[in-house]
Every structure is written in structure tokens, then in C-alpha cells.
Length: 345
Image (cartoon, rainbow, N blue to C red; front, side, top):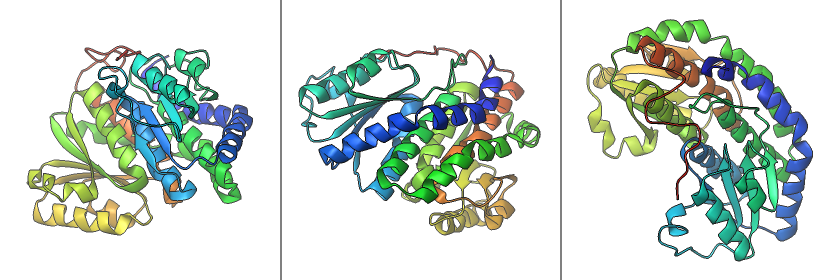
């Protein structure tokens, strides 16, 4: 199965997760409530770390859970783990095999913490080390660049949030995700045509904010590992604290601008970048004013609750990276220097 196949498999993978893991997610939520958990300590690497950024915003916004992102080297390299016994200690990993993530979970259990794995392999060392597991059931992912394992991680995180709140409206939106992602896949030919414009691009910045700060990081990671573009992700707020000096005529700026609370400030910034610095703007958005500013507008299918937008919004970014890689003449299936499972200590 190719990278493109796996991108297009995402609606089915998400539907499978919603169907097969509902009770497991409810069990995790019951344990969190019973233990009166007040905060989360989350360990991940690479794409899974970007999923952790989504959890930081989602669980903070709707579940009142502060999320601290772990420094795994404290557990392995320095052997000076912090006190995490009162936390929900979460490991997120596609393969569940990286020793440094497993070491965080093992130390959490040693200190008496409740532990959870979100992984695509229910028999992995990570899953075996934890008390609770949400298996993302994405199926085998052969391409080195993670796509369906990322979106299913996001969905698992959102499922747990909804189970903790009991919000029926959130559950309804989760049920719509397979069709929403299917709608974004219909943009494939449009994105393929647009990607040719960026064939000679060597660097860019990727902007997002709030829930889509994770999207900016994941899009930038895919640009680096597939198309070998030096892509730097920023919160649109952080970008104004120094990195905005990078902007100049023709400089590529990619932005994720869904409707919601973050849109007005992002649109103000993008307006200044386009009108004053004359940057080259690619925008994934369902806001007409953001799309009107863009040299390359990519329209999300409809107006959605902002918290759910990182799931459909990453799909056109995945397609863009796939087609840009092909336009540049690189191998979409075997990025140089990378393997499917990366083991770090």
C-alpha cells in the first residue's frame, strides 16, 4: 500500500476506530474520573508529539486538564525523572516500540500514576507497560510518513475528551468525521495542480494557532521528511515575536485558518504579510477573507467547530506534501535517512 493509498484510507480507519474502541475509551474515562486525575504528563516523539499538542489544547479547553509534554531524556539519558505520580501519564506512539517513551510509562507506574497508551499496536512494549490502552486500529501503515496513524491518534484524543465530558454534541461531530475527511479528499486534483507552483521552494513557514498549532507542526514535519523543505512551524502569535522578520516578497507562508476564535487575529496578521511584505500565501481555510488573501486557497468543506478542524484540515496538507514530493522528483515511499520505526533512548 502506497502513501497515497494510506491517505485515502483515512475515512475508513477513523470509522473503524469510532466503532471498535468506544468501550475502551469509556473505560479510560471511568478510570480517570475514579482517580480524580488533575493533570496529564504526555510522552511522544515525531508525528505523535504533534498529536500531543492537540491533546494539550483539547483536554485543557474541554476537560480542565493541564497537559505537560514530557522530556523523555530525563528518564533515560539523565535518569532524573520528575515527580509524576499524581498525573495521568500518557504515551502516544504509532509503533509503541521506542524505549524512551516506554521508560516514561514505566516510571509513571513505579510512582503510582495511572498510565495510558495510545498506539496502533496493542501488543507493543508501550501497550504492555501501561494499565490502559486505546488502540487506534488504523491497520498496517507501510509508508514511512505517518498519515492515517496521525489522524486516528487525534480522533482517539477527541474521543477521550468527549467521554470525559459526556457532551452529546461532541460525540455527534465525531460521528461525522469519516464523511468530513472524505470531503477533503475530494480536493486531491486541485491540490495536485497547485503543488506545481511550489516545485522549487526550499523553505517556508507554517502558521496555526490554538487547536491547529498541532496542524502547523505536522504539516511542517511532512514538508521536511517528504519534500526536504526547511519548513518552520509557528503559532501565529509567536511568529510576531521575532520570526516575522523572515517575511519578504515571495516568501512562502502556509497557514491553517479555520473559522473560530483564532481566525480574526490570524487574518489580521496574514493581511499585513500579504499587503506589506507581499508574501506568497497558501491558506487552508473555510473563512472567505483568508481564502481571498491567498495565492493558493484550499477551501475546507464547511464551517466546523474549531476543536474538530485539525482532523480534516491536515488531510489537504498531507495531499499537498505528497504531490509536492512527486513534483520535486523525490520518493514518497522512502524518504532518505528514515525508517518506519525509530528507536530512541
